[in-house]
Image (cartoon, rainbow, N blue to C red; front, top):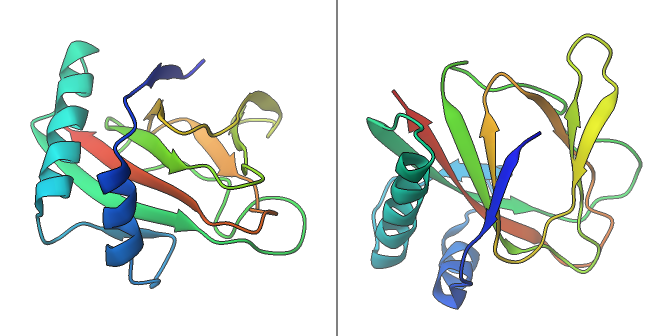
Length: 152
């Protein structure tokens, strides 16, 4: 259901997230541009454009999902994103030692219709109107990704 592609692994992007993520939340908007964040933004913009996804503005984010105990979905999941006419991509840099899957759900029933297992280099494109849930990270390593949102 969701579009996916693989990008070349950029270890400098992973190191950028590790040194920049402040731990205020799982997702933090990138406010200060660096060489790494600009390269990620440009790569994201090219991917959106190649898919015909309008991207007048592209916002970028750091994302780190720390290990937690318990079952089910991580805090604040499942959900959709706003505005509903936008698209987000998730680029996995470090899936962790026990990758926490991302479920796509049927909105009316909550039934899982697709499960994505994070892999290093995997990039997933998700329209904002799609219900989804990241399962809790049961590993010993953080799951780390960069996120970009294409806004019209």
